[in-house]
Length: 356
Image (cartoon, rainbow, N blue to C red; front, top):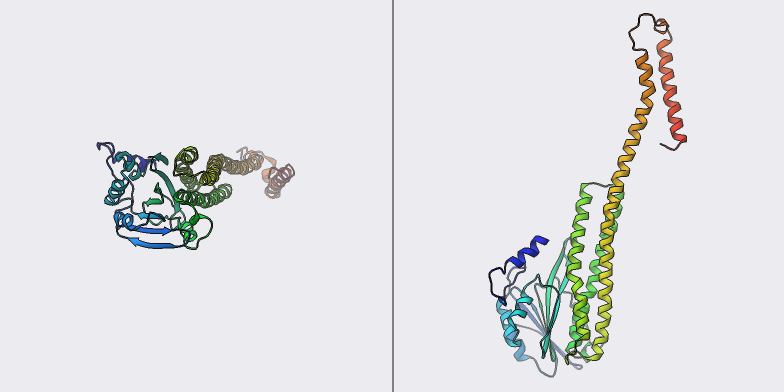
């Protein structure tokens, strides 16, 4: 994971600052651009072929949401930068998938970079996708790396069926709704992660071994990855609340404070999971130590039982000619019986002492 992060930064070595270069791992593919234009009375949804077409066909009186799936396509990003007159450094940040979540106020628009998390189809691998939001007056553009991790369906449904207050509010509320959808999805991810931590804890106690250590190390990596991706979001939302920007209305800041609280909860859950995984190592070492103690206890019991038996056997193994018991017909059975009695007595003693 750390290696991938370093590789993404190393791809920009030797380039001028502000050079737009996609550093992610999603291969370049056909871009999908969807447009939703709505007001209180109506909504229209369509696919467009380019960002220019979308900007030319939308009405200034409606709220327009343009969603672009295809961050790896440099041409689309250049068009976005040209239309909004984005500074090259901002465009570079949007294409750099190793970029921390951030907020930039550019006067007549602002943009937010944050991370969208989702599990792969096998429910094992945790994937991360960078999402950029450009918010202007009556327009929001969301740019995703790929459509696989899209969590905006709930927002689309509320717009289509006029649920809630989204069609009564401005573009800042739409931006809030998209951020809220991403943050709410964090709870789904953390619920899955929490179950994995609990299952691993049970596995460590029952069958500690090398495979368990591998799973524990994998979980620890994912939690560190999550923390790095989500922790800066608290600062981003805090800036959205404090920022004196005409695009962010006072009634929207109330909802942003709610997202801020949810972000704090997510961070606290991540910290709890991290502490739990760190504690799993202590549990693992304790389980291994207890298992070793049980083995050593059994071996010690066996050794202790055989000490008097070995003494008797060695005593009668001496090569003296005149030993009365050697000529006794019942000598051998009697020695065997004595050995069995000693062994049984010791086992009963150990049992009463609860050493077994």
